[in-house]
Structures are given as structure tokens and as C-alpha cells.
Length: 380
Image (tube, rainbow, N blue to C red; front, side, top):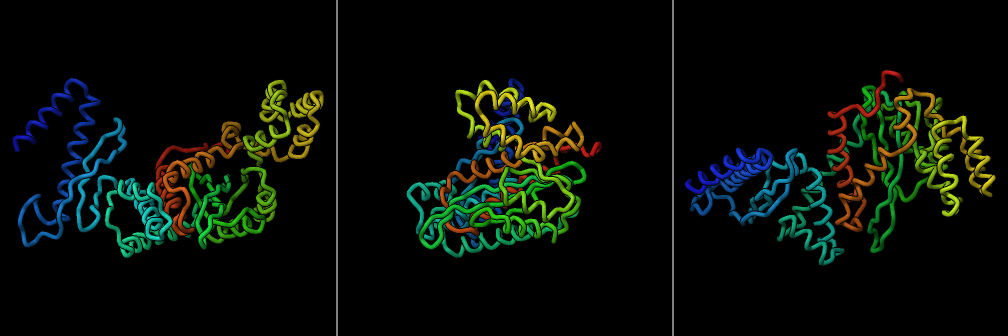
């Protein structure tokens, strides 16, 4: 009791001298007390107490960081010897954490783990893991994945962004790259929603069309503009699946492809007019002339070929142009997938990949729906 009083005095003293640091310490102290109480309830006994009602035994604590609005706090997360400790403190992050646990443990139990994976498993606070625990963890996650991917699409989605990103998966003793199809829609309020994710062996027109069919079966309607990279399969599938909608070639992807046919030593002399032409359709002829004058007929031909699909975004409110001419919103989502899965390397199965990426999607989707508008729909 005396120790607790001294700790409270120290926190108050810090708060009076440095409010931000003091607030962090206060949050840290309070959340540690919450977890101590949660552990006491789950164990059904006080620390070191001899009791017939005791269900389990404490096994120390593990340091766990939590990002707050005032900075990162380091908490002492209790460990329970007989079963995993459950806490509401990290509720916002628990879905992704459980999915990550599931992938790591599945890798370990399937014999594809390395010493590095074992270290990650230990860092998750799980020394003794049973197949039944992994199975129960996975089944709950699979239900969440199914619910999220099959939920009705209730709002019209005027704008859509689509892309595929690749992950390495182990199948039948060998590794292969699989394409994760992802779609983001902008709802009637101007907010982003992650509409779907599907895993395929590669990108084909037929598979993209099936992907779009699933979206329409769930209620997708009102699509007017679809933004993507220059994959021909996407372009053809969009033209058949969304009659009356336009396809917008992402400017970032177009520039990447254009730079492949322009030598580095010549890029500096043409880059300015190229970028200006992408933002001002009236400059496209001038840009082509500059490219030809620099001996870059192939680059000029690319402008000619893709001209109609580079400027479909201009049909909408100018305030939205910057966000309608690229797939940056999807690129950032894909980077988040990679960042939060880099510990894994290769996934042990398709199911484990979907559990983790959809769990990440669900967290991000909640932030988007409750957050600010991405696009103002007033002028659209």
C-alpha cells in the first residue's frame, strides 16, 4: 500500500512539472492497475494467495507498448501459466494481434518455422502452444473474415479503387506468390470503405470479373469511376461489369510505366512537361512534341494510346481531382499490409493470410467509417 502511495505521489509530481509526461505516467499506472485486476479475476486469486477457488497461476509480466495520443507507454501485461491472459486494454489492437498470433503459431505447428519464428512466438508470450488452441483461435478469426467479406454493401459507391498485391504462401511443400485483390469504395458520405478482398493465383480478366460480380451480388451499385493501374484484365472487366462507368488509369502507375521507356539521362529534360500534361489535358500535344524532339517516340505513343483513360477524373468536381487520379489510397493500404506482416515472411496457408489481412482491414475500415470524409460529395 505504501509503495502504491509513493508511486501516485511520483506521478502527481511529474504531472505538475511536465503535464504531457505526467499524463503518460498516469495512463501507464492506471492501465497496469486495470490489467492487474483482470488477471486477478481470471486467476480467481490474489498474487501468492492460497485458495481453493484458484483457477490458474500468474507467470510474471511481459512488456507491451501501447500508442496513445500523448505518446507511447510501456505497460506490464500479466502472463498466466495455464492459458493466455485476456485484457480489454488492447481491445482496439486485439483483433490484429490474434490474427498475427494465429499465423505464427500455425507456422510453428506445421514445421515451417525457423528460429526467428520461434523467437516471435515467444515474444507473443506463448511458450507452450497446443494445436487445439491454434484451432480455436483460427475458427473464431475465420468467422470474422467470412462476415466481413460477405456483408451487404448498402451505400452507393460512386468511386472505386482496385489493385492487387502479392504475398508468398506455402502450399504442398513449396512456395508461390498469390495475388490479393482489394477494392476500396467511396460511399455516399464521401468516406472510404474496404469492400472486399479475394486471393487468386494471378491477375486475369476472368477473375477480376468474378470479383466484381461478387461485389454486385452483395449490393454494389452507382459506380461511375474505377481507378486502377494499367492491367488490361482490370480494364476489360470494368468495361463489362460496370456499364456506363469510366476507367481511370492511375497517374502514378502511368508515370512508372512511362519512365521504363525513357532513359534516366533524358527524364530530367521532359519530366516537367509530362507532369504538367497529366494535370492539364490541353498540354498533351505539346508534351508529345517534346518527347518526339528528344527521340522518345515510344513515350509519345504511350500518351496517344492511353489519352482517353488518363483524364476521366476531370468529369468530376475539381476539388476531388487529386484523389481521383491515383490509387494512392490503396497503395498506402498495401504498404500497411506489408508493414504489419513483415515478421512472417511466407504464410503457411491461404487461410492464415486472409485471417491476418482481413483483420487489419477491419481495424482500418472502422477508423475510416468513423473518421473524416475522404472526398466531398457535394459537387459530385
